[in-house]
Image (cartoon, rainbow, N blue to C red; front, side):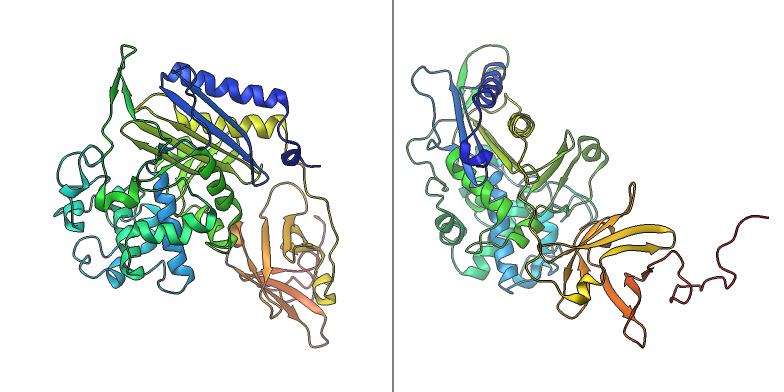
Length: 464
């Protein structure tokens, strides 16, 4: 029986409760709700509140702010997977009229916040505390000078960029963003407590005075055109299910391959980001914390803080929601919840299983190979991939998938996207492997093999 089937140990559960209790108390937040996911199941819920007998549960709605962006990114990737757009298309191609301002940014630029656009709406008052009716058109969001940086050159977080992605969804689907989201993501995934407006039970948003233990209610504005950037309300229960989807995919919504693409770095990191180990994928924030890669997103709007963090390697995800404008560092809390579970109850590896069928031509590739004097080993895996690993110490690693024609394509590391070809002699025996023009032979600088530059005819020798 796996850990996820058993549930978490009492000592682990207590450590999780202690962490959120400290966050709620030290962060001075009216309430804080959290959940932990493992093995695709919600295995722990916890909550703390300043009101006795009114603790939120997994069904209580909070506003989730910019976690909304990840939902919008899912809709954009669905359009790509259906062939309705290419991520390298400029926005103007599908949303005419944006070319002179933001339209030269590609869809990928907008998803990764590399479109050079301003961080906030450029016209009117602070958009998160004012009605969306003040910005009825895209031009009201973008202003006369939407750019702050050259397109594609640097990461600059942009709420207007996701407003444009929402408009793109509406243009290609012929329906409001809210309706498309409900039909294509929320309903298939069973996220019945997620939506653009609160439904009871839900909490109110509060500002906590920085120097006194008193509260001020925050307004809950409808963001209008800015909805795709930060409008949604949700629960720890729904976000736990969403976390499972972002880790595993669901073919009814988006494939495992596409959600993996969302979790792949797509934006150049700034110096400050490198120091914090933070970068951005396609609609997902990525952070290395304590040697662990966390994928997900944070959210912040007046009155609310939110975070969803996933460690795919540990098969653990955490959701943390709070109803205060500032207070606990919810991203740190979520990261700690993941760490507590991962360290206290390490993931149990899947049983090793042999290949069901083996192609002799593939088995022939197994074993050691040499690029110059650097040794690697190729190993056919039960999942149908080839694994390339250094024979000893550090070195380049890769997984390669078969293309069905005797070639293989690298999936990660230095060789991601590079082609592996098996080059044979006239008699059918393998002469060498060509991986992105790197020649791998069975012996270091093997005599008679097609090594670039040739091999000295006198062969290996000593000194003197």
